[in-house]
Every structure is written in structure tokens, then in C-alpha cells.
Length: 136
Image 1 (tube, helix red, strand yellow):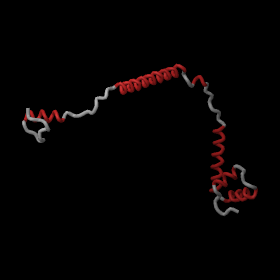
Image 2 (cartoon, helix red, strand yellow; image 1 turned 180 degrees about the vertical axis):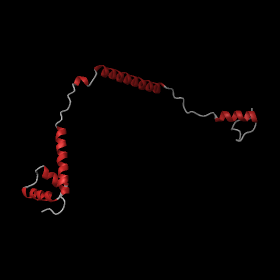
Image 3 (tube, one colour; image 1 turned 60 degrees about the vertical axis):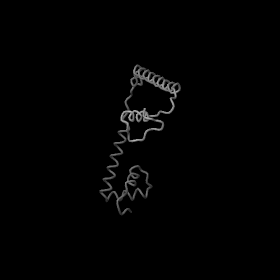
Image 4 (cartoon, one colour; image 1 turned 90 degrees about the vertical axis):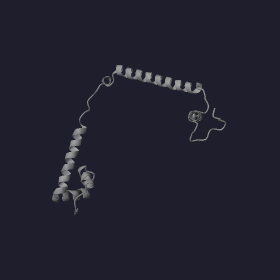
């Protein structure tokens, strides 16, 4: 005998005839007295029937030739080939410029030239004269 409401899983098993005879009889007796569980059984039955109707609807048949347009595929393929060739050419050009480029040694900013020019024009500066500079 079932004293409380029947669980949803048990109602589903009852609807699908998955319960053994004694358990199915207990659920049947409970459903006769419980409007809430009977309403849940009715909801599950409507849902099951709707799903069965939905699954029975055949899918539309679409010919495979209508899915692709060969001209479009060729254009896209040709565009990808051109883009790939351009990328390879750019990478090759950058690599060649790197290999053939000349090493110019360390880059030194001309601060010493600026200081000498400043001292020559003003005769004075915030820094002492560089070693070897005699003011000429």
C-alpha cells in the first residue's frame, strides 16, 4: 500500500508497464484515490503520445545536388589556393630579407655627438667635457 504520492519514476514505469504485478496493483489502488498522481500520469501519457507523433513525422527528402553549388565550391577553393600562395610568398620574402640582411653591429645613439655639439656652441654644459675634448 502506498501512503504518500507516487514518485515520477514510479508513475513512468507504471505507464510503460515495467512494474511487477504486486507493485503495479499498489500504484493502481493509489491512483484511484490520489488526484495529484492521476494528473501526473495523464501529463506523462500526453507527453508520451506527443513524442510518438513527433517521431513518426518523416523528414523531408533533399537531393544532395541541391546542397552544394559546384561553381561556388570552385570559387572558394581557388580563393584559398591564391591566399595560401600569397602567404607562402610573403613568408619566403621575409626569410630571404632576414638571411641576406647586413649586420650593422651595435646601434649607438649619437649622445656623444650631441654633447660635443652642445659644448662647442655654448661653451658650458651640465656635464663635464668628454675625455680628450679640448674645446676646439
